Length: 438
Image 1 (tube, rainbow, N blue to C red):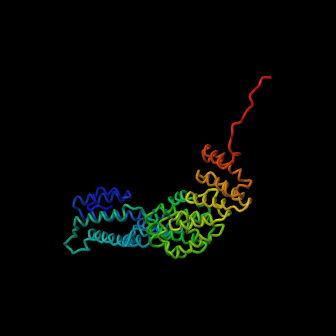
Image 2: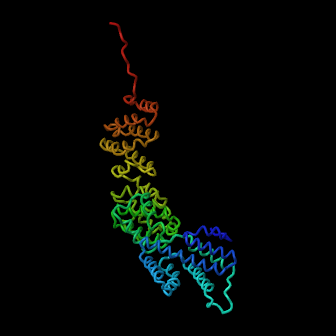
Image 3: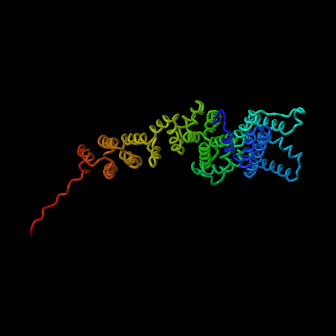
């Protein structure tokens, strides 16, 4: 945060480029010696050196337009073409703003004032003869501080050439589908120094493609991981986009992309701010009547959102045995209690031996390790009150499995068995005949 009166020796240390830092140090020395014209001239030279070095960095990163500008500067220097060199210097600020977005429009105005004052200081013919230009200490100091806070302390932010590079990076066959790996890749790409407009266009472009419904699940997963990784790299800029741009993107989501929209909300909860009621209505309809192949994806994502959590719970409560069985292998923590309740309810309403056996094998046994004592007791009650469950051949095996896994204390287990008259499940000490002498 800027302070009311910055210490000039401290701001020198913020200068990123070594050459520019030494030039700025010279400018500060001139300022302290009351040589304010020299201070302004050296400040401008520091800015020029810094901007040219930024263009070099961009050219190394693949920006063809930056490479062209650097080549022009080098050619003018090698051939000692002073008219061309002056022309390039005069257009440097405009080019760096318009072509490379290295600073904002307001910052451009401040830098142009520095350039104008530098010309007044360096060229006597720009002022009235016999009256040399005498800048004030305050003016020289303001230029020094503006230069470091506007240009000299920042790395170059990559621009238009980077956007296509980022898209191609994510589209590559082996781009990661996990967020941590995607973040590692993007941190070594132009994404780490991208300008605001590049971040915006990349994120919105990724999102639109995800929600188009045209991609395979693998391609969607790659883009989702890139989107979440970019959010972690540039959280403040993405949070702003959530408020300003994502609403329109969501409104254009195709039917085939709504399931992926739910996953986006699950990964980046801040995006729920952009979900209008016009977008929420078709999502709720999707959750209610989701196709079998998307059931697990949609419900798992919806349960992790605040907006559609209740819709996911209602969906779980309506599932039949075959659909519910899709959740039993690795039930998400957020859904576990609802899955156990639904499985228990289906088991309790078994209408035949075969129905009870199927409910036991497909639902109760795979979930058994998640049952706590009250729910285990409920299973005993179901067996005691539903003759179809008690008569099913899998019923006794389920009781033995509960005992084997020690899901409730053995003392409580035996008490439940004896209370219900199921003595066959209670271990009794073996009786042995006393030895007799022959």
